[in-house]
Length: 482
Image (cartoon, rainbow, N blue to C red):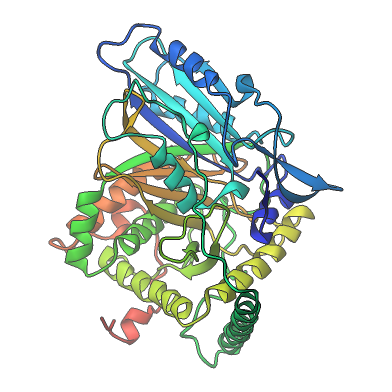
């Protein structure tokens, strides 16, 4: 079976370089069964390698013409020594060391002559756990696709007898009723006309904002702030992980009348400001984050990429975490309202256009010369709500580790699992030493946001962020309307 690639899929191949690979990954911590032998992980390695028959896209490489990707085509034989590897480290409980090792795996790109995925088993000789670092090229699927595959390869109870790894699971697509050709053609044309009309409207509204006629719209492209986290993406990665009790997040979101996503945007914003201050950087205006928007229809299960990415203004000018949150809520909902009022494809076109400019700057080595789209990219996806097992090993956590957008910044991805938010952070490490402080600051920022409801004296100055007192927040001008 072969599969044609969408234009969005192809962009992940075309824009990939050794300095900025376009794969995404998951770092999973697993508990070895209590009655397992000491060579459990070695036997698991051999068992996984025995599954040398895969289904698409795990059995497919990219077919190209003069370097341009055309479609996925099956390979004659999988190289299981390449696709499934084993590593030994000193101590899996040493989180910073594990993250540093994973960063070294994450910075290398996948072999383009092979199917674009790998499983890395990581073990030590001291603990009753092991880790899986799984990487797959972004052109194979977006976040919702990869999460769906991830869940299919796990079970809700130990399963030693019927274990089949995800690459060998049959994912034969369901047969669908054929749409009459005239309906498909005219429906497609009508959808394209609506998308083009909405695209023109998006850019017209942005022009009005540029002319300061109507400020109540999405941020202008490339109006972000240069920081030590942004700029030309080069080889080298910093990775960190953290956990936050998602039950606390949901409870806090109800008390604050905000979505869980808005609560976490505020947490990450406060934490990033604090990390930047460690490098002597404070700012008189809000930072921006990129926000992915899922363009799939409800129930759609095709693989590939169907996403748009748009910038969202965060907050500044308020030392009170609660008031910062209210700013973020309003700015976030401005973008959501714009997305709901437009055809999904129009946001896809918008993403392609602004990302194309960012990619050109990166390919020319000019990302340090232009303002970035955003300082962070924040995305979240729902994962399994209950405990899951990889064969007979209980999964303890699953941290997503994504790619880096052109222009740099920190990619922050959150997946919920068994009542917890597992969060992965990744960035280029050319200008910073580590993201471990940012992981700690995220935990402390969430604690502060939670406590500030009952204790108004708490403020971001306690976390070391310096605020320009002359800055006038929109919150001061107009009350937030629910």
